[in-house]
Image 1 (cartoon, rainbow over the protein chains, first blue to last red):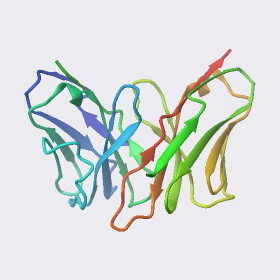
Image 2: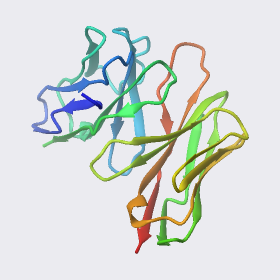
Image 3: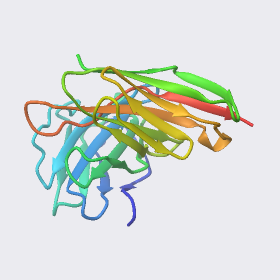
Length: 113
Length: 113
């Protein structure tokens, strides 16, 4: 596709359930980034991948959050035992290389009941 | 602590009324400064990258400039379709690999016909 694709676009789930968010980057982009945007807050960086490797996971909010990337392409962000404070828009971005402009998808809006 | 501060938080202009948005940053070792535009329900759309003080970039009615402590996004003769939230973000030289973007909270711009 022409841009970064994220799915689902919206997800409503009950507290305590696990959720999986998917990101399909621009073809050929080696770097992939996850961010979180909460109401009234700025974008918060979570994690990045260079190829399939995530060198620094310290930006993940808690150990309930994990991310992986396979085949240098699609990435998934998993949140286990969701809490209400996890409600936010989760944005994915990709770039042709590290430090190059990042191009964003339209995000997954996650609502925890 | 590295910070990005945008002002004003909100700005309402008449169509054709030029103005400037400010992004000030306090970071140790700026690698690059990025401007994005975000429409409601959408991901940020890349506008400009600036790397060194004195650099300027232009696109249609927008012009971005960079000094050692701040960046300005100048909007000349804006149209209603320029209404959006404008986000500023930075990347920094760090000890390890690539960090994600550090974003300001944005300026919500409304252009009235």
